[in-house]
Amino acid sequence: MTRFSPQPRPPIPRTVWALGLVSLFMDVSSEMIHSLLPLFLTGTLGASVLLVGVIDGIAESTAAISKIFSGYISDKIGRRKPLLLFGYGLGAFTKPFFAIAGGPMVVLAARFADRIGKGIRGAPRDALVADVTPADIRGRAFGLRQSMDTIGAVAGPLLAVGLMALFASDIRAVFWVAVIPGLIAVLCVIFGVRDSRAEIAAQQTRAPPIDFTAIGRFSSTFWTVALIGVVFTLARFSEAFLVLKASQEGLPLVLAPLVLVVMNIVYSLCAYPAGAASDRLQAFHLLLAGLGALIAADLSLAFVPGLTGAFLGTALWGLHMALTQGLLSKLVADHAPAELRGTAFGLFNLSTGIAMLFASVIAGLLWDRAGSAATFLAGAGFAALAALIVFAGRRRLHAPHRHSAQAPLPPAPASPKTTP
Image 1: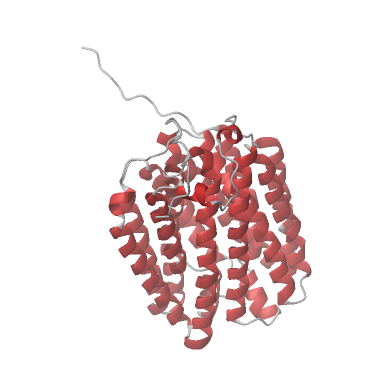
Image 2: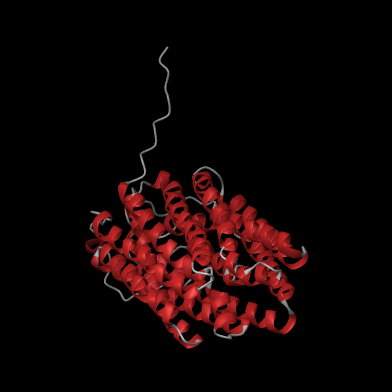
């Protein structure tokens, strides 16, 4: 009797591995700075917690606005690599300015430019992962890239801890060393990343990035995913507040980067298994699990005293990120037309980035006016609201994909549609 074995899944493409290395080195550079930046702002430069939230919020919303245009441009020209190179190059260029900053406004300017670079590279990078990866292993591919990104996010703060000890808590000296891995990331883009061979530009309409005809081509499921992403982001404000919370509970300055180490270790260990699980399990269950982890994180940060509560909440925060971030990217790719995939990631990142501005400003304002517990309780409330939206949209999330890499592209509508 002939025995049939399931057909093996294709390997993850080389370009996805290369993009993972790029993300790894850039995150080493960025997290060496970001793990110390909240305390550099409040301690060295005398900024308030509200100003920390404003700076992070403006930076992230700037990245979001950049993403919608970079995603559209990469769709239009049919190439992702030029935008990746420019975005990562701009990020590397900004790193020295953190070291020479004499006031919060210089930090804001550097963060502004750095996040423009992130915005320019973000949507084309995610679109390229989707371009080169078969649909049945797309969750694994996004999970792998995110895991490598997060390995860098672990290594960066660990390196910062060692350098803080070596340089006698000289934060500026650590910032100077952070320039090196940023340059390595740029070299990885130049020599390791290859564009998709798909002729994206020849297949798509030549509409502007916010043309209503193009927007009308996105399904109601895509907009449900975007709404979920917005409310998720309101619940998940900047990680700077995790660093400030641990410092408030007595963590020494030299060990402050360990907060992001803990978060990113959990994130890194869980991101790939969560991505692989998203290829097999229903998105509804994984999203609710991620929100449950976020609510538990916020409650721990709000009510469990001392460094125990701070680090427990931080670990749960990392679990939430692992369960949801790659999955949301997969859902965007699955429910967008292939020739508008870059634009889809741009729209998604625009909406969530604007939400990040409000989330970080609200978090900083609550912290200054009512204390850290109020900040984290507000986050738990937004997470509960997101859970209700996920539950209400579960049928759409489980609907068959209208768009896939193998399926023929749907014709463009003759006239604009009303956005669902």
